[in-house]
Length: 236
Image (tube, rainbow, N blue to C red; front, side, top):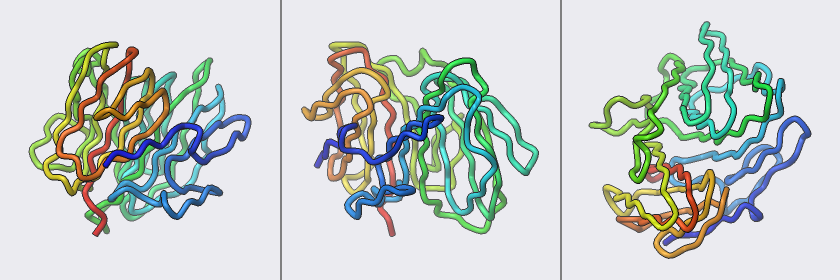
């Protein structure tokens, strides 16, 4: 099963400094059919104006992944971590027992991010934050794992969850495939740019696809496309 979730169907709001789209119920947007997808809880598509951002606020018991699509995001938290994550790179915050952080766009232009929340399978641990640069060429024509809590995934940002976050770039007319370990996994895929079909279902820029019961997906690009995919366990 692959369900198209078009950009036009998403929740969200434009706050001036922040234009946000919600693939799942979040803040003032509530849709009981879009509460989670397996252990994937949040996928926000945020455009943040220059020299604005999210002031200090707190989280607990959540894995929060930020995939930067354009510009850069600057993180600071009460653990003393501070870092700038530019476009194409990824940061992961394991909120654990509690963390307070801020996220700002300190760049001269807009910053665009996907912020992804995944429910952890380990609680009561100390919070942590990390950022990692991933060679962009490695994603050309193949999925690359960026963050994962699945055994055997190496050289990636760690997650305290039975899930992985992957990225790929696909040239127009070309295809990439991804095989889930079993048909009970929950996949969620969003096009950061471009246009493509997923097992024949057509998507455009910023559209999402909710995937379940599929062992393999094939993404065929009709324009140069950047894809982000989450492979998540069922919600227990």
